[in-house]
Length: 142
Image 1: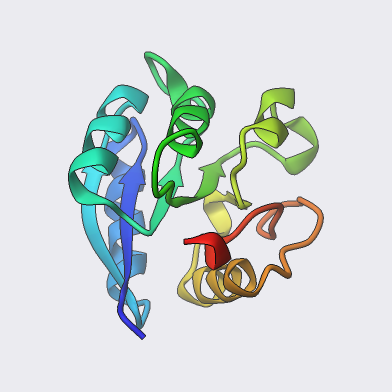
Image 2 (image 1 turned 60 degrees about the horizontal axis):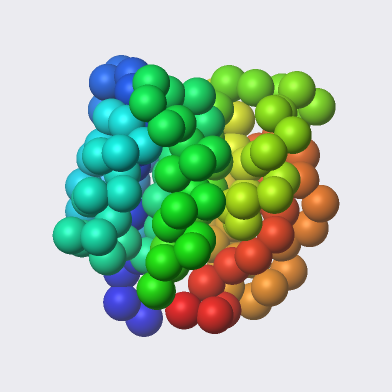
């Protein structure tokens, strides 16, 4: 199976660095790009065609929710895992409506979680959303 191509989107450089480090330790996943805003995420996704986008929710500009909505409306939409510091019970209501496959609390981002969520997204078994777990759609349609 080819590597999962990942775009990391977050306005905080320390998280992009941390996510990149996690990806380097995750077999079968490769970082293809980084973005610091929703607008940049849309540009990078169009140029790089990632399989997976790790998307922050709250960023300057259009933010992660709107960027995800736009990504999901395009051809060959990537799988999106939201990554933020919100408790799952405090997520903005729009998060559930835009088609992200999972929500990961930033404190829980780890190689084993990425592997498990990607596998669950691939077989369509992602369940109800909660911290560090999953929701929704997966790569089965890719």
